[in-house]
Image (cartoon, rainbow, N blue to C red; front, side):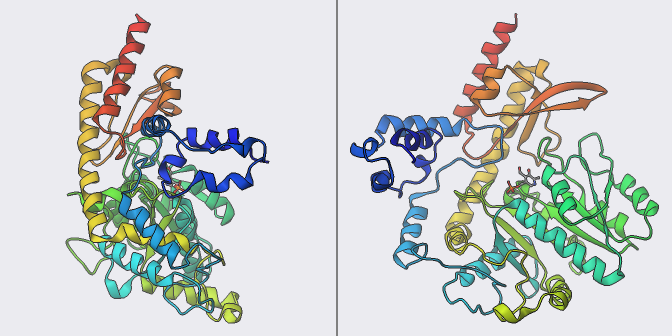
Length: 441
Ligand SMILES: Cc1ncc(COP(=O)(O)O)c(C=O)c1O
């Protein structure tokens, strides 16, 4: 049985601070009677400690800010309307009528259309759904690519990506039973379009399922979509963008073009086939979720093939999604993040994370150049550097990796400057680096 002590342990990890609407007293009945006899109220001091502690998470791309009170008011409205009080289910295609009336497809559809517009998809040619995570969205993108390419050619595609791609891409490749063609990277960690050209020429008898990353996990590199498309000319291909983190903020910056579906110079030209973006990363949705957006034409082609194998009778239509049951609460809650005022906040956050990234880089270059701080491009909110002491790695939950850079293998760490990583947090981080450097002398 979960004890009161264990329950409070969760709050130490910051969970309760982000869920102002969750009343810990109400779960007392779940806890061990003896232990639960006193109330589990967090003191103001506890709450302040948690707030500070969560903001020290610098090593992973999670927005640790607590959403505005309006979000929790919205959550309450949904609860009052019955959503999340019994089993709602978004099974099926959100753009079709569902046989289960208790769903939130209306919210889900609207989210996809609103974000589809942001990524430059033509409104009449947009399809997608709210998934469980960036990985889940990548899975759908790769599965859709695999299905349409096999349908067009009768041959399974090979999956092209770089070793800088998120590790889950290799897992998905395994699940989809695809052979990998690893594409070399440029010095900044982005896909080398010339090597892609060469690898495509080496594999002429298989269509190409290319996964490009817009913001690689450790270095923050960008695979250049337009150059990839040039290399793909003349080949049967499907290009999926893994924009788990950068896809959240780039649309609100002058670099929006990196993630737009339509080519700026020729709007009739598609730059990619589908895109995956995590909702808990930049947007700050307080639980894992993902956007998966593609065109309606891609979806129709996929669906035509999908329906040949999957009998749609059971749910009265072809679902178009890999999982059958899907969460109905997340789309209703995430709808809040597609409102005009939420978008204004996202635009503000985009500006501040890029400014704070520049600040951190300049300060680290000025004071800690021995750590070789590196930002590989101006679009990135990630700075990697030689691994500092274990104390700092632990305090700021830094991700670390053993990398070979300039023919030298070293341990590196990175800071991902998310909206909660403000000047105060970054200054505290650098003060700790300073103490580290004094200790080294
Ligand atoms: C580039 C990239 N793709 C995919 C993922 C996985 O996303 P999620 O955690 O939403 O499944 C990550 C996570 O850090 C990532 O950096």
